[in-house]
Image 1 (spheres, helix red, strand yellow):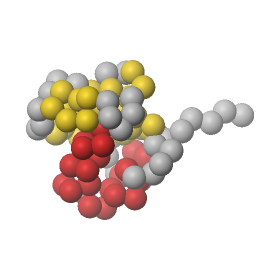
Image 2 (cartoon, helix red, strand yellow; image 1 turned 120 degrees about the vertical axis):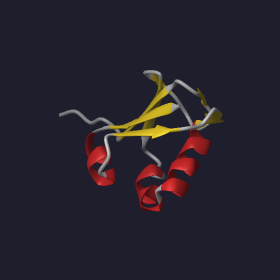
Image 3 (cartoon, helix red, strand yellow; image 1 turned 45 degrees about the vertical axis):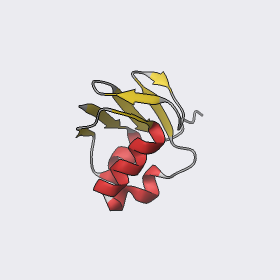
Length: 81
């Protein structure tokens, strides 16, 4: 089971804070594709080029591996001011 978390504006856009996914081994790009297949309305938000992702609280990229038991967090870019 992979635990997927959504933060900030992304959480509000998707209407979901957490999503559990029964998957074994994939990468971030494959995870996004799977999430979009299961939730087509999420396509625009999850394909945002500036979307940040962390795997087990470490910054990740599209090729980063994800395994069962991992926690993946998606969040929009952080701005300060």
